[in-house]
Length: 459
Image (cartoon, rainbow, N blue to C red; front, top):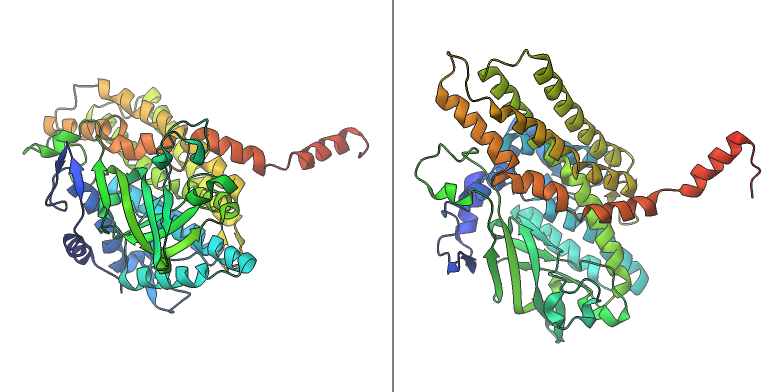
């Protein structure tokens, strides 16, 4: 079933989430003015799937049921799927100007499809069957999943089992005949309270001593024992004001939450990894590579910022100035270079044993490394235009101020969390991508090419 935006909203109203903001529990999560814009962004991922002009990008055919499903619930089966994923991200980024929150769940599903298949082949376990059953449930009901990977981590110099507080990494505290009990938290969870399901994964590679932390599972977002503590964003209380003038983005936004698991029960049918520590690192790398490709969304948000900068230049009568035109060109160059990266890692993808199509890990990390840099330069160039306060006589002052507020929103305000902050820290730190780039490059092959051309004999 392909849900509509209104059906999605109704489905959220049925959830009994425990959500806190400003130290108080929120009774009506859907209509809260600081959360509603993020819900609107997710709702658009449902609405666009019903538009004929976006069918090929926004939907796919399930390899399980053969029915048409939302692409956010799809397991990539070809290079074409990976390319369409990037195009979908750019499209939604350009229409929302923010994070639309479903990518992380999609990436978690695809990573788990590979890892659970490998686990079953190696250990004769039953994880892949469980996963496929869960996947079909997600596809048939068109659910939004939150992929929860980042733990609080505590002392970064210590392994999970060596922490003073063992709950600083989410762990299994009890194994029962009917399931497991987990305790811990997942931090910085984008769109968590707009999700139907929470998919939990380990955050780092594990050793034998950390086997209790090598756990992956899925739960309904309102399962007993799960609490959401929403974080703050710059200029976020502007959403509480009656006037919309200073919001910048009037319709869409994002949110992040600390998700606490206080001795939560998980039935075995929803457990996809439990103690097989050797497979934790592979799952992390697969998810990270998929999610780094997902930053095609920042290209779409970049489109919005470039459009706002061009509009501001026109409103201020400076659009034809050579230095302004040069800056707009540079913004477009940087943005399209980002797009090249996400398309390249899709085009160079390969088929895994599970039948899932995996992105090229090296190019995915190169793409995300560019995302940690280029959006800041694009935003810097856009902010430069804010200094022009006096505009053309035929442009209402209100229009000029609204476009400047949007630029502020994208580069400094609440939306900057989805553009600049996520560009830097989403899908892992910049150093994590550099480690993966170093690991993925075939340096001996490059050295051999250099030696061959200058006459140094092969060793």
